[in-house]
Length: 238
Image (cartoon, rainbow, N blue to C red):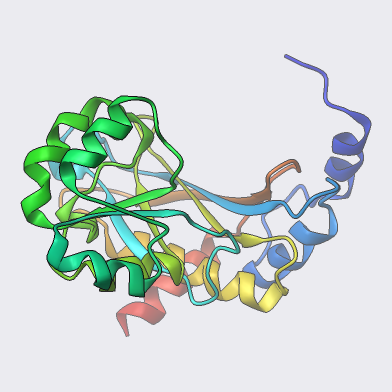
């Protein structure tokens, strides 16, 4: 196992060893961050599901109240009738299906999210091997394939993020930057966890959320008290 650097070890010594509450975690994760750039704050959730079974797949989207702090580059793929709507909504790149296939097949990947109108999917389907492994393939279930492409672009620009459980039964997501005020991080955290809770598949048995951790890009993680996660779920159900 590689040896950690001095700054990381110093941060680890300051980090609580026991699970902490949500409010405390959002303050502490900023305090122990040591990198010289505005690190992302990330959440990792271990779920009690078996993603090998289709009826236990967990995926969805959530619009974070305060955004992610990132400037997301959005590629909109649509016909001529939607070009202006996509541009007006803030799309960084707008292409037809044929143009997108040509450029992306040639190695162009200067974007962070892709939205498309349904009629363009007959072209984009050929890009599955390129976009799929990168989590960029448009999908109706996440609202990235839609006739209302302007609304889709606006949602992503406003802080919409997608989540999907991995083969290791984990979900990762960015909930902001370390420069965010703790209250904003807490709001985003609650929104993200709430969305994952609502995405619980009916086939999941036993404890659904088994652990939750938060961390900045370079610093050690903090474990969240599951009792607080359960209270979030109770509040949502009330």
